[in-house]
Length: 210
Image (cartoon, rainbow, N blue to C red; front, side):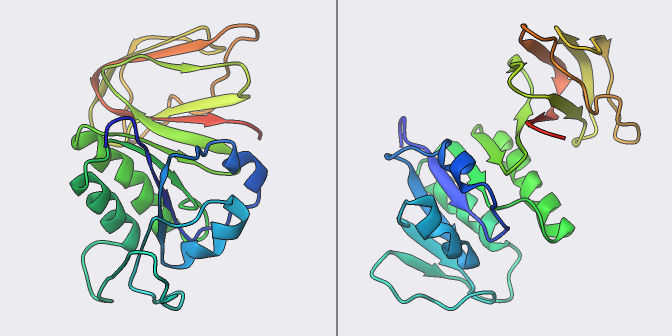
């Protein structure tokens, strides 16, 4: 699916629809997962594909292509949606409605970003407060439109981390999973922070408000 992005919509609350709609594009391919269909009207984009075991919402029985999953399975509805989209050739992903509520599901959905990176895909999660993505061998940037940003090691190996144009710069640092050294940094006003990772992957959060 060259130049076409897949948007996966989960069932977590979205309170700032105006903000989230700003991420969406008319040519996106929309997968709504189970109770994520509750966001369809406010987002203003109809489902291209519906996926779910419908344990948290009823099967809508629409003409829209629908994949009904069994209740007992290894993949969550959201994980299955990401795998199905990869199978269909998508390589660029936006996940919304996947942060908040149950912490276990939130962490599981963040892990999808790692899964996408391992598959050679780009993925981002956007919510009411922030956006998150995996960074590795390519520089990442944070403009001063964002109040804060955080860099976290979630893979076990994250070395050679350099941060420029930030309140707390780093030079060839190692981030570990048991000490959040990269939490709550700030871009210097009037500049764009630059983050590079020499080895491993890091999770970058850009945060709009405290």
